[in-house]
Image: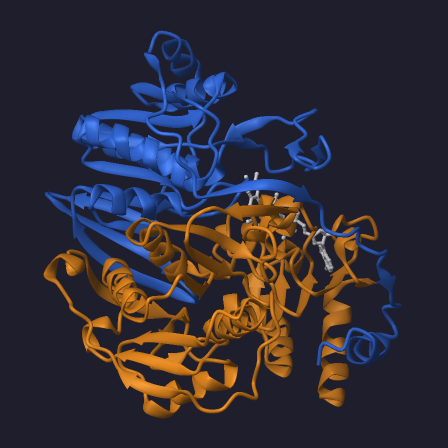
Length: 245
Length: 322
Ligand SMILES: Cc1cc2nc3c(=O)[nH]c(=O)nc-3n(C[C@H](O)[C@H](O)[C@H](O)COP(=O)(O)OP(=O)(O)OC[C@H]3O[C@@H](n4cnc5c(N)ncnc54)[C@H](O)[C@@H]3O)c2cc1C
């Protein structure tokens, strides 16, 4: 079985978000980059499925050279090879086109990715790739098992979950608890150095919706503390000042 | 030219977030002079419920009543909405950001060659181009996004616009959806919903508990508060990881993102990953015994105290007031 996992290269969840150049550029000062947390779930499940089915696992990222350490980490976690599409990921549509192109070339049986990136939080790429390839897409998927040619999934819906069945090939946007995150071990880190990381050029430059300017939310005023022995004061404030009910 | 709104339903009831999308479309139509708002609703829904979509600002509802569309099969819904879009010659589609909405919108972006913006927080600027403000970095920033395509799709974040409630009933028309087998290659075999509760992603008030509550046996007072306030219950990630509460209650970076009017956090430290899922709440109340808990920095109101002492008293105070 051939599995493709698409990963994002994103600021660590604890990063302070700031912008420069008149709020047109993300300020990378002091920011550590990681594999998107949802992509980590996709990768972990893909490693398990590849091991079960003795297939091949490829990871793909659309990004510039600074993504390479992130791809090496994915190789250390267990991917067999990596593809980096050498381009700035301009918008979801642009990224989806690159993925669809390489996915078609590689004829993958299963494509996994995170439900959304944690920078732009679009949650759109899996559906776009599905439509571009003419195959089903599912998200957010919290369980995925393969039984012959049938894929059994559990998808989260508002306030519950949905049990689904479909056939390969398909695409799933993953989230927990699909698998436990895997941490690279020494052997993985060593072998990652010799695994192929192929850099390819983007296939098209088309975009549909690009971010042009950024803004931070207004600074939060300081908290109003209420004495623990005077809880009725809180109820009054919620009613008369915050007007929440 | 009309603006189309995709309506989501659960067991025949139109979702409030979809009505917010209708109100958004209504305000957008007024701003751009783009004509009226047409909603498309799929599956088994009563006529009264459909006509009531008018209150939120839709002039007309296209109803694809085929019961095969009751369940939200992603491909089938995407195909049906594309048919409605083409039928009315719309250029703009508005929907609520949700797990189904996102999945359907992404496929439609390709089908309709439409620039898609998700997590939209306010009406677009349309005087020079089409510039949409959306929430990014899990609520820690906003981006202005320029949409360059003729067709456009906007997925609206909950609570981004006031719900219009004074419109006349909408005209309901039946809509023949051409259903193909290829739209049903996937099969929903079962659905499990939290019953009787207020659904967390749509709740206006959320009462949330963290590891500070020590164990699942102490959730009674959290549930009692939620019941008094008509709120949904939620929790931090360790609480669901420990199995004290179901997974679908976990909010934050890796869990559900909520944007209620009021978020009450009890015994939650306020780690950045938790805040990422709740920082769009309009008002945040924190109860924590540690005065240095980071959550107090994000809170509007706070009580420094032991939850086991404060919450029962607060429950009595809420009951007396409401
Ligand atoms: C990549 C990543 C993603 C993550 N995603 C999420 C996420 O989506 N959601 C999430 O919640 N977390 C997430 N986390 C975990 C997060 O970092 C914190 O560990 C978690 O939010 C802490 O939960 P907590 O506040 O309930 O528990 P704790 O950190 O243990 O805090 C408990 C709090 O309760 C207080 N307390 C204790 N006893 C009492 C009492 N009797 N009365 C009042 N207060 C009391 C304490 O003072 C403390 O502040 C993520 C972490 C990582 C690394």
